[in-house]
Length: 304
Image 1 (cartoon, rainbow, N blue to C red):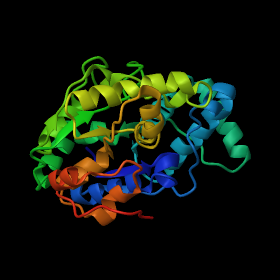
Image 2 (cartoon, rainbow, N blue to C red):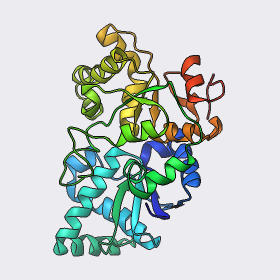
Image 3 (cartoon, helix red, strand yellow):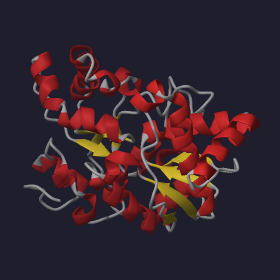
Protein backbone atom coordinates (compact mmCIF):
# COMPACT_ATOMS: atom_id res chain seq x y z
CA UNK A 1 0.00 0.00 0.00
CA UNK A 2 1.12 3.51 -0.82
CA UNK A 3 0.55 6.65 1.25
CA UNK A 4 -0.75 8.66 -1.72
CA UNK A 5 -3.01 7.76 -4.66
CA UNK A 6 -4.67 9.56 -7.53
CA UNK A 7 -8.30 8.83 -6.66
CA UNK A 8 -10.69 7.72 -9.41
CA UNK A 9 -14.16 6.99 -7.96
CA UNK A 10 -15.82 6.43 -11.34
CA UNK A 11 -19.31 7.46 -12.45
CA UNK A 12 -21.60 5.63 -10.03
CA UNK A 13 -19.73 6.57 -6.84
CA UNK A 14 -19.72 10.18 -8.02
CA UNK A 15 -23.42 10.28 -8.82
CA UNK A 16 -25.99 7.64 -7.80
CA UNK A 17 -23.91 5.71 -5.25
CA UNK A 18 -22.34 8.49 -3.21
CA UNK A 19 -22.30 6.22 -0.16
CA UNK A 20 -19.44 4.29 -1.79
CA UNK A 21 -17.42 7.49 -2.22
CA UNK A 22 -18.05 8.76 1.32
CA UNK A 23 -17.24 5.33 2.82
CA UNK A 24 -14.02 5.12 0.81
CA UNK A 25 -12.90 8.60 1.85
CA UNK A 26 -13.60 7.79 5.49
CA UNK A 27 -11.64 4.51 5.24
CA UNK A 28 -8.73 6.32 3.58
CA UNK A 29 -8.46 8.59 6.63
CA UNK A 30 -8.46 5.56 8.92
CA UNK A 31 -5.74 3.90 6.82
CA UNK A 32 -3.73 7.15 6.70
CA UNK A 33 -3.63 7.36 2.92
CA UNK A 34 -4.09 10.54 0.89
CA UNK A 35 -6.60 10.51 -1.95
CA UNK A 36 -5.49 13.09 -4.51
CA UNK A 37 -8.37 14.55 -6.50
CA UNK A 38 -8.47 14.57 -10.30
CA UNK A 39 -11.25 17.14 -10.66
CA UNK A 40 -11.84 17.07 -14.43
CA UNK A 41 -11.74 13.35 -15.16
CA UNK A 42 -14.57 11.73 -17.10
CA UNK A 43 -16.07 8.26 -17.43
CA UNK A 44 -13.43 5.62 -18.23
CA UNK A 45 -15.27 4.70 -21.42
CA UNK A 46 -16.40 1.25 -20.31
CA UNK A 47 -19.29 -0.50 -22.02
CA UNK A 48 -20.82 1.18 -25.05
CA UNK A 49 -17.93 3.54 -25.80
CA UNK A 50 -15.34 0.77 -25.47
CA UNK A 51 -17.30 -1.48 -27.82
CA UNK A 52 -18.52 1.08 -30.36
CA UNK A 53 -15.58 3.51 -30.41
CA UNK A 54 -12.47 1.67 -29.13
CA UNK A 55 -10.07 4.38 -30.29
CA UNK A 56 -12.11 7.07 -28.56
CA UNK A 57 -12.11 4.91 -25.41
CA UNK A 58 -8.29 4.81 -25.52
CA UNK A 59 -8.13 8.60 -25.70
CA UNK A 60 -10.54 9.00 -22.75
CA UNK A 61 -8.50 6.58 -20.66
CA UNK A 62 -5.17 8.14 -21.67
CA UNK A 63 -6.48 11.54 -20.57
CA UNK A 64 -7.33 10.09 -17.13
CA UNK A 65 -3.92 8.42 -16.87
CA UNK A 66 -2.25 11.70 -17.88
CA UNK A 67 -4.11 13.61 -15.18
CA UNK A 68 -2.93 11.03 -12.64
CA UNK A 69 0.66 11.68 -13.71
CA UNK A 70 0.12 15.43 -13.40
CA UNK A 71 -1.09 14.92 -9.83
CA UNK A 72 2.36 13.65 -8.89
CA UNK A 73 1.12 10.13 -8.10
CA UNK A 74 2.27 6.92 -9.71
CA UNK A 75 -0.85 4.88 -8.90
CA UNK A 76 -4.57 5.35 -9.43
CA UNK A 77 -6.86 3.94 -6.73
CA UNK A 78 -10.17 2.66 -8.10
CA UNK A 79 -13.30 1.42 -6.33
CA UNK A 80 -15.05 -0.10 -9.36
CA UNK A 81 -14.30 -3.43 -11.01
CA UNK A 82 -15.24 -2.15 -14.46
CA UNK A 83 -13.12 1.00 -14.18
CA UNK A 84 -10.20 -1.10 -12.97
CA UNK A 85 -10.38 -3.47 -15.93
CA UNK A 86 -10.93 -0.76 -18.54
CA UNK A 87 -8.16 1.52 -17.31
CA UNK A 88 -5.74 -1.40 -17.03
CA UNK A 89 -6.64 -2.58 -20.54
CA UNK A 90 -6.00 0.86 -21.97
CA UNK A 91 -2.83 1.26 -19.94
CA UNK A 92 -1.44 -2.04 -21.19
CA UNK A 93 -2.19 -1.14 -24.81
CA UNK A 94 -0.59 2.29 -24.50
CA UNK A 95 2.49 1.09 -22.60
CA UNK A 96 3.18 -1.74 -25.06
CA UNK A 97 2.75 0.29 -28.26
CA UNK A 98 4.90 3.47 -28.41
CA UNK A 99 3.42 4.47 -31.77
CA UNK A 100 -0.12 4.24 -30.40
CA UNK A 101 0.83 6.24 -27.31
CA UNK A 102 2.46 8.93 -29.48
CA UNK A 103 -0.60 9.22 -31.73
CA UNK A 104 -3.00 9.43 -28.78
CA UNK A 105 -0.82 12.06 -27.09
CA UNK A 106 -0.67 14.13 -30.28
CA UNK A 107 -4.46 14.16 -30.41
CA UNK A 108 -4.75 15.03 -26.72
CA UNK A 109 -2.25 17.86 -27.14
CA UNK A 110 -4.29 19.36 -29.97
CA UNK A 111 -7.25 19.88 -27.64
CA UNK A 112 -5.17 20.99 -24.66
CA UNK A 113 -5.71 17.80 -22.66
CA UNK A 114 -3.20 16.10 -20.37
CA UNK A 115 -0.88 13.71 -22.20
CA UNK A 116 0.36 10.41 -20.81
CA UNK A 117 3.96 9.27 -20.47
CA UNK A 118 3.19 5.67 -19.50
CA UNK A 119 4.15 5.67 -15.82
CA UNK A 120 0.88 4.90 -14.00
CA UNK A 121 -0.37 1.72 -12.31
CA UNK A 122 -4.06 1.10 -11.52
CA UNK A 123 -5.02 -0.65 -8.29
CA UNK A 124 -8.42 -1.51 -6.84
CA UNK A 125 -9.13 -0.79 -3.17
CA UNK A 126 -9.75 -4.53 -2.68
CA UNK A 127 -6.21 -5.36 -3.77
CA UNK A 128 -4.63 -2.68 -1.62
CA UNK A 129 -6.29 -3.61 1.67
CA UNK A 130 -6.40 -7.41 1.36
CA UNK A 131 -2.66 -8.06 1.20
CA UNK A 132 0.68 -6.75 2.41
CA UNK A 133 0.97 -3.48 4.31
CA UNK A 134 -2.60 -2.46 3.49
CA UNK A 135 -3.98 -5.58 5.14
CA UNK A 136 -1.87 -4.96 8.25
CA UNK A 137 -3.07 -1.36 8.40
CA UNK A 138 -6.68 -2.46 8.15
CA UNK A 139 -6.36 -5.05 10.91
CA UNK A 140 -5.06 -2.32 13.21
CA UNK A 141 -8.07 -0.06 12.60
CA UNK A 142 -10.71 -2.84 12.67
CA UNK A 143 -11.68 -2.03 16.25
CA UNK A 144 -15.28 -3.30 16.11
CA UNK A 145 -15.58 -7.05 15.67
CA UNK A 146 -18.55 -7.98 13.46
CA UNK A 147 -18.83 -11.35 15.19
CA UNK A 148 -22.02 -13.20 14.30
CA UNK A 149 -22.42 -11.53 10.89
CA UNK A 150 -22.47 -14.00 8.01
CA UNK A 151 -21.16 -12.33 4.86
CA UNK A 152 -21.37 -13.74 1.34
CA UNK A 153 -18.58 -12.31 -0.86
CA UNK A 154 -19.54 -11.46 -4.43
CA UNK A 155 -16.54 -10.72 -6.65
CA UNK A 156 -18.32 -10.48 -9.97
CA UNK A 157 -16.40 -11.12 -13.16
CA UNK A 158 -14.44 -7.99 -14.07
CA UNK A 159 -12.14 -7.93 -11.03
CA UNK A 160 -10.96 -11.49 -11.76
CA UNK A 161 -10.80 -11.90 -15.53
CA UNK A 162 -8.92 -11.67 -17.82
CA UNK A 163 -5.94 -12.64 -15.68
CA UNK A 164 -3.42 -11.19 -18.16
CA UNK A 165 -4.89 -7.73 -17.42
CA UNK A 166 -5.83 -8.17 -13.77
CA UNK A 167 -3.90 -11.14 -12.37
CA UNK A 168 -4.20 -10.31 -8.67
CA UNK A 169 -5.51 -13.72 -7.61
CA UNK A 170 -6.82 -17.05 -8.87
CA UNK A 171 -10.07 -16.19 -10.71
CA UNK A 172 -11.61 -19.56 -9.84
CA UNK A 173 -10.59 -19.60 -6.17
CA UNK A 174 -10.25 -15.97 -5.02
CA UNK A 175 -9.62 -15.32 -1.34
CA UNK A 176 -9.22 -11.55 -0.91
CA UNK A 177 -12.79 -10.79 0.15
CA UNK A 178 -12.87 -13.75 2.51
CA UNK A 179 -9.63 -12.56 4.10
CA UNK A 180 -11.12 -9.13 4.75
CA UNK A 181 -14.43 -10.51 6.00
CA UNK A 182 -12.52 -12.62 8.51
CA UNK A 183 -10.41 -9.61 9.53
CA UNK A 184 -13.68 -7.79 10.29
CA UNK A 185 -14.58 -10.57 12.73
CA UNK A 186 -17.41 -11.79 10.50
CA UNK A 187 -17.93 -15.22 8.94
CA UNK A 188 -17.37 -15.61 5.17
CA UNK A 189 -20.01 -17.74 3.42
CA UNK A 190 -18.87 -19.81 0.45
CA UNK A 191 -21.09 -20.45 -2.58
CA UNK A 192 -20.38 -21.18 -6.28
CA UNK A 193 -21.90 -18.04 -7.85
CA UNK A 194 -19.58 -15.60 -6.04
CA UNK A 195 -17.35 -15.40 -9.15
CA UNK A 196 -20.13 -15.14 -11.75
CA UNK A 197 -21.41 -12.12 -13.66
CA UNK A 198 -24.16 -10.07 -11.98
CA UNK A 199 -25.95 -9.61 -15.32
CA UNK A 200 -25.48 -5.84 -15.50
CA UNK A 201 -23.70 -5.68 -18.91
CA UNK A 202 -26.73 -7.14 -20.72
CA UNK A 203 -29.63 -5.93 -18.57
CA UNK A 204 -30.88 -3.42 -21.16
CA UNK A 205 -30.50 -5.73 -24.15
CA UNK A 206 -31.69 -8.99 -22.57
CA UNK A 207 -33.32 -8.44 -19.20
CA UNK A 208 -34.44 -12.06 -18.95
CA UNK A 209 -30.88 -13.33 -19.38
CA UNK A 210 -29.53 -10.75 -16.95
CA UNK A 211 -32.07 -11.71 -14.29
CA UNK A 212 -31.19 -15.36 -14.83
CA UNK A 213 -27.61 -14.47 -13.89
CA UNK A 214 -28.63 -12.24 -10.99
CA UNK A 215 -30.81 -14.78 -9.18
CA UNK A 216 -27.92 -17.22 -8.83
CA UNK A 217 -25.83 -15.33 -6.24
CA UNK A 218 -28.96 -14.09 -4.45
CA UNK A 219 -30.49 -17.56 -4.19
CA UNK A 220 -27.25 -19.32 -3.28
CA UNK A 221 -26.20 -16.74 -0.69
CA UNK A 222 -29.62 -16.87 0.98
CA UNK A 223 -29.64 -20.67 0.97
CA UNK A 224 -26.15 -20.69 2.53
CA UNK A 225 -27.42 -18.55 5.41
CA UNK A 226 -25.80 -15.21 4.57
CA UNK A 227 -26.99 -12.10 6.41
CA UNK A 228 -25.55 -9.77 3.75
CA UNK A 229 -23.64 -9.84 0.47
CA UNK A 230 -20.55 -7.65 0.03
CA UNK A 231 -19.14 -6.62 -3.34
CA UNK A 232 -16.19 -4.48 -4.50
CA UNK A 233 -18.09 -3.28 -7.59
CA UNK A 234 -20.76 -0.54 -7.70
CA UNK A 235 -22.29 -2.03 -10.87
CA UNK A 236 -22.68 -5.40 -9.14
CA UNK A 237 -24.11 -3.53 -6.15
CA UNK A 238 -26.62 -1.79 -8.40
CA UNK A 239 -27.76 -5.11 -9.87
CA UNK A 240 -27.90 -7.01 -6.58
CA UNK A 241 -29.57 -4.19 -4.64
CA UNK A 242 -31.74 -2.12 -6.99
CA UNK A 243 -32.75 -5.07 -9.17
CA UNK A 244 -33.36 -7.45 -6.27
CA UNK A 245 -37.12 -6.89 -6.46
CA UNK A 246 -37.19 -7.79 -10.16
CA UNK A 247 -35.01 -10.83 -9.45
CA UNK A 248 -37.49 -11.93 -6.77
CA UNK A 249 -40.42 -11.60 -9.18
CA UNK A 250 -38.45 -13.46 -11.87
CA UNK A 251 -37.53 -16.40 -9.61
CA UNK A 252 -40.49 -16.47 -7.26
CA UNK A 253 -38.14 -16.19 -4.25
CA UNK A 254 -38.23 -13.43 -1.65
CA UNK A 255 -34.59 -12.52 -0.94
CA UNK A 256 -34.51 -9.37 1.19
CA UNK A 257 -30.75 -9.67 1.56
CA UNK A 258 -28.86 -6.37 2.03
CA UNK A 259 -25.96 -5.63 -0.31
CA UNK A 260 -22.91 -3.80 1.09
CA UNK A 261 -20.12 -2.00 -0.70
CA UNK A 262 -16.70 -3.26 0.36
CA UNK A 263 -15.81 0.12 1.87
CA UNK A 264 -19.01 0.04 3.96
CA UNK A 265 -18.17 -3.34 5.48
CA UNK A 266 -14.62 -2.25 6.24
CA UNK A 267 -15.91 1.03 7.60
CA UNK A 268 -18.34 -0.67 9.98
CA UNK A 269 -15.48 -2.76 11.40
CA UNK A 270 -13.35 0.39 11.69
CA UNK A 271 -16.04 2.16 13.71
CA UNK A 272 -16.95 4.73 11.03
CA UNK A 273 -20.24 6.53 11.65
CA UNK A 274 -23.42 5.80 9.71
CA UNK A 275 -23.41 9.41 8.50
CA UNK A 276 -20.44 8.47 6.29
CA UNK A 277 -21.34 4.84 5.55
CA UNK A 278 -24.87 5.89 4.49
CA UNK A 279 -26.63 2.53 4.50
CA UNK A 280 -29.89 4.48 4.20
CA UNK A 281 -29.22 5.06 0.52
CA UNK A 282 -29.67 1.35 -0.31
CA UNK A 283 -32.86 -0.01 -1.84
CA UNK A 284 -32.77 -3.21 0.25
CA UNK A 285 -32.83 -2.08 3.87
CA UNK A 286 -30.78 -3.51 6.71
CA UNK A 287 -32.87 -5.57 9.10
CA UNK A 288 -32.70 -4.79 12.81
CA UNK A 289 -30.67 -7.97 13.31
CA UNK A 290 -28.14 -7.00 10.64
CA UNK A 291 -27.86 -3.48 12.06
CA UNK A 292 -27.07 -5.00 15.44
CA UNK A 293 -24.41 -7.30 13.98
CA UNK A 294 -22.89 -4.43 11.99
CA UNK A 295 -22.89 -2.34 15.17
CA UNK A 296 -24.48 0.66 13.44
CA UNK A 297 -27.22 2.95 14.71
CA UNK A 298 -30.79 2.56 13.54
CA UNK A 299 -30.94 2.88 9.75
CA UNK A 300 -34.34 4.06 8.55
CA UNK A 301 -35.70 6.40 5.91
CA UNK A 302 -33.64 7.94 3.14
CA UNK A 303 -30.39 9.84 3.13
CA UNK A 304 -28.81 12.18 0.60
